[in-house]
Image 1 (cartoon, rainbow, N blue to C red):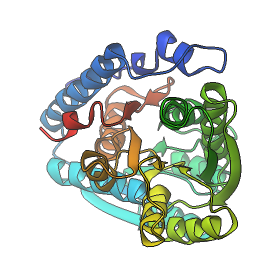
Image 2: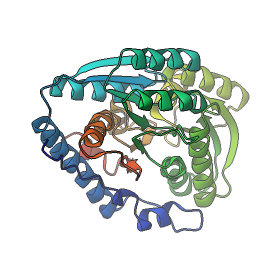
Image 3: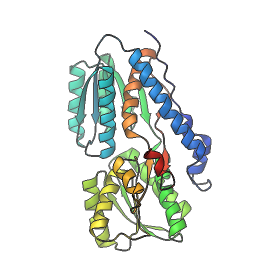
Image 4: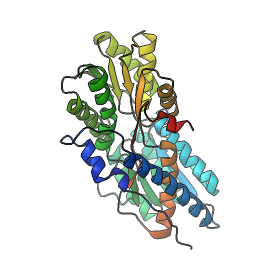
Length: 345
């Protein structure tokens, strides 16, 4: 079988970017180097897609993707990317939405193993519950790709595709911290929409708070609420506004929760020229709000749709060349009014 050429760029989170995001580092901003690296990642991913299509065997592969909440727009975009890539390659695809229920995800993955699919891609809701299942899948000869949150526990996954959560959080928090420093004289009451039930996302929230404190030491985090999708974000923001009416900076661990918060703020007539709402994942709705000049000021692009395609192409590479030891990284680009037009060409 023709060897698949698939260059995975790990330089997007380079020494210079880590220095920018670290607590001991200097002010963090989007750099031309970071943009260029991310653009290279996208270009190389597209090249890999073409190569993968050329090397597809006559066998119609069966691919399964289990995610933990398609109601979360980020995972909805990933699932769409997985589905579209499989359709492009003529593979059978089955997608499981566990709806943040570990038992449902366990049942789904067990069924995929019994069905003898060729590839299982897992974005785990509860990592521990997946560990024995990964071994069972590998014993059955199935390629297993771990996405987003690490399964860990010695589970023999064939590849891990993610972004360091703390670094991702500092990118999100830097957007908010720069706003507070530049627009609010370094002072603001801040609300953070987090997700404390998922260990990896706890690190993301820590990165958000640390970056804000670094850039705006006088800012105060006066409220935290769990929210990962628009419905949860709206409810959380309504509660926050009742208890903390002086909040004027809201930062979500993703765009899903932050978009719901935006709706609640608009409905409460709390929007002002100084108000900041921001998140991460660069969902289309968030990008449009930034372009429109609303109080939704910033996001961070880790390209969920193409990340879904990357899951599939990583699995193909594993089938061609064997397991991948190094972490396969998503891009990480802050998006504000300064570069929003790059997303509407």
